[in-house]
Image (tube, rainbow, N blue to C red; front, side, top):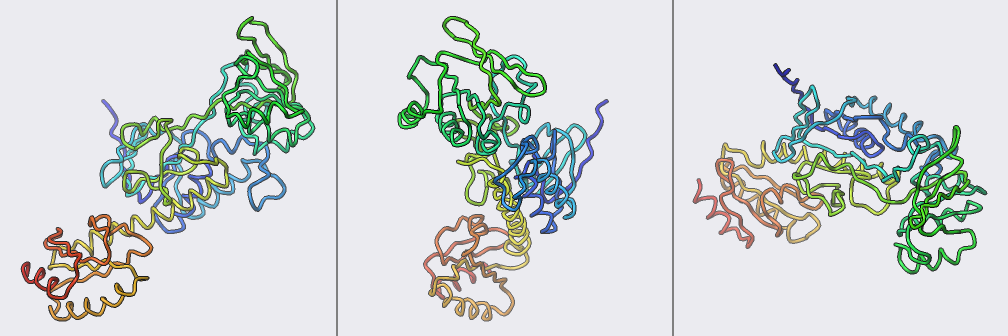
Length: 411
């Protein structure tokens, strides 16, 4: 007999415990929203594997990624955020209440913040797992280039990211050897990057090659390449290896519910909103240009704040805007528009003339159009008349007579 899952209610469920999810948790926790963060593996995400983070503001001593993310976790806990180390098995994000299920629990939330990140595509070469991250194989030149000053590094790949990151590495490394699977002179990057790489004296190329395996004791010492035409094995002694053969966003859980790009990333707007109201996404899982700890933290701050605003607007919308006790009049206006502000006096006159038989709400859309969008209004100023908790009429050509007539028909 299947065990019945325990049901818990939260304002915010955050899926993923990397820097983006932790930052969002700090913001929602500080806003006194009941928040839980669910992480299937390690709090801190891929950042915990970074040996040194030299470009995160406020940490000049280049601490390990784990040090920074542990501080983030402690800060979120101090804000009252709950943490759960388990995998999310399924989600239903389509309703007004969002459902996130683990093996033992069902979480019902007002909002969900997706911070599931992604994973670098790996070569599948022999012994690769023994050298991932701080043992010789890296996936981020921006993060680890300085640690390779005067060293010999191998770069796997010839796309735009591989060649541009390889060029960046030449500012630090003494030598950069690039493994390219194509014939000599053929790369997957753009022509400008190719020309610059071929003319760079610090870059060398092993053409028609792919990774066969990795060797070393405690740390990577050699990358074994294989010629795709002759099967010859080519050992390349090096200090470190950078793999730039793609990135896979962790979005399998959300397929069929959230809009994804053709590469599987989640597109979001400036508020980190997905195409589903009340669902936000942050960090490496989103369709963005730069994937760094600093940008993930910024995403989390935005999403945490946006989630707070969403919950507040939902409560106002259902409890106040769409009240059922009386006929309602909602004035949607932009406070920076002089005509909109001037009409506020007419709204007050109309309100007084109905002698408390009318519920009036004034909604300034300058900072947020959320309530206006729920009312399907995009032209401002506008009036929405409601009765029994439903929209009865929307008036965009404002005049005192047209508004009074609409109200009188429903009174």
